[in-house]
Image (spheres, rainbow, N blue to C red):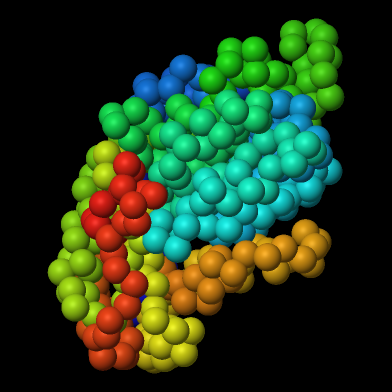
Length: 381
């Protein structure tokens, strides 16, 4: 049986059918229907945020965020993320400027952000990589000092909190994805969360052609989502605590089985509640990674080189120097992790990784540097 890096969670079909029958009864399929409104309300409550605009997908969410903040010029961003983080900037006719990542957390390095600022910089777009929060305190300080907007790509961070506060509440806008590969999904979908109520109103207008009532108040697009997608979200949200608990248990099993293996894991934020969205490993070399990958493929196990390649190598962003991201991208592998994955399969995967990653050796400590000590400790994924 093939084991992929992820597998979508699906509720019992009867749960979804019951909601779909309501849609058929009403005949209201899209255009800000009752299930879209209900999902937005439930997500606001669960995520503890003041506003939430449900949209068609996570890429659109990023594009709407850039448009709603009226950004132009340069946006400082991370080279270690999914391509949509960068392509959204280019799509909105801004220039992505890559700030290298921290080699321990894999998140954008605040010191590199500071060095990348020019008089053309309008914003910072940072990703909470693998659900691990960025150093939001340092980023907020920089943004305040230079009068910059902040957008967070939180596609990996559903259910993550920091110091008891939802990670979705940070920045001027947080954008997220509800794609079927995510731990919470609506098949396709996403959301945009704005701190400022006026920005939220702008996002709601942009989502629907720029129309408010009978007026067209701005240039908009069609970023709405359907009642069928919202129904899937409503059904899935009922199981979110079970999903999170199962992923936590599987991650802890990986931790146990890989103790002493010649791999390391990203450092995590101490005061955060983790969502166990992914299980990434950093190998000592790309050769070791490929050796493990080939061994896993022989057993019909398909992890993912996530993220590879570094986005600083994209032809349409121009040459950018990010040696840490380029190095890490060559050596990171995300192991299979999803609701319902069998513990026996986790054990088999971990044994192959431990066997083929090479003998244990001295390598980068999993302790934080003094610069990071206000935020991190030696805990790992």
